[in-house]
Length: 68
Image 1 (cartoon, one colour):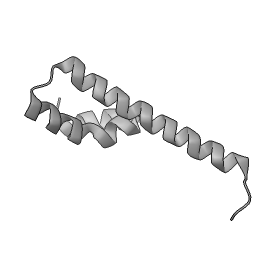
Image 2: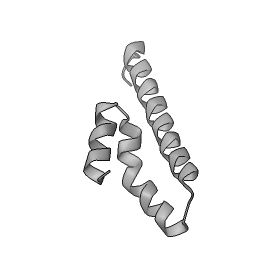
Image 3: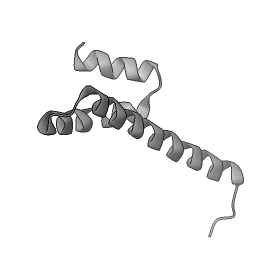
Image 4: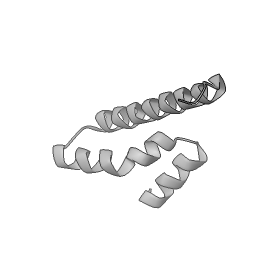
């Protein structure tokens, strides 16, 4: 599967964290000769971090805290 197809598929699946970290993770994996499980783990970690950050941002918006 070509890079552009992978990026498009991640976008369709709404895996924005994986999509953003894809190039960096693959570059690091090639340099360090990581196993496929390590690559998938790194991509999943990036996705989890992105979702947590979006959740916090959403919660802060909903809280309607007064501006400083």
